Image (cartoon, rainbow, N blue to C red; front, side, top):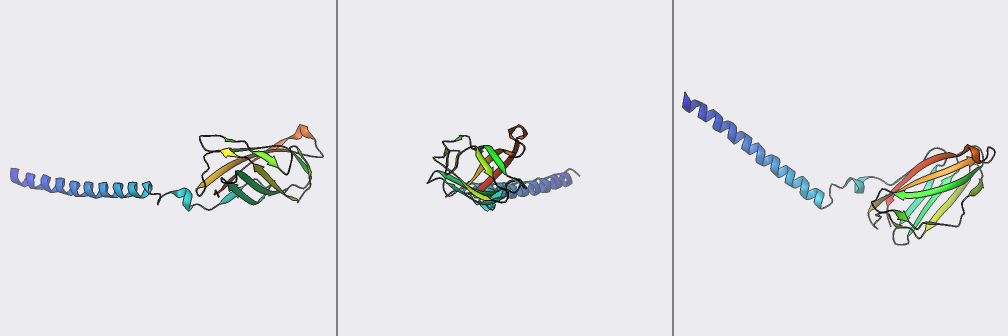
Length: 165
């Protein structure tokens, strides 16, 4: 009777050991794939530009080599607006700093309904953006309708997730 129980426990131990080795090999393979960047989900995700319906995104570009950020937006509101401020940030540990508007000034007044406008910032540094990798720039736009005045300021947040060139 005692010999029969030892055989069952030995079989159970061998069964668990075999599955343990298989599980360990799978974990090591996943670690190796992650280390070499094969499982990097950010490389698999498509480029995108998300804003509210107020300002549909038409085009965008993040440049690490030229230190520029370009954004083309359309005024999707039914009336002209004045942009009071536009702020840029990233999710990186270091701040996205030094971005100065180029070709437009804040406040950006009387942006007519339906018009598309190019916004370009130069001298942008930091933010953890590396050429060849995907980067995310967070944009916060404060605006108000021209007919209502600055007492009725609204805010729209957007993001650009794209390959940094």
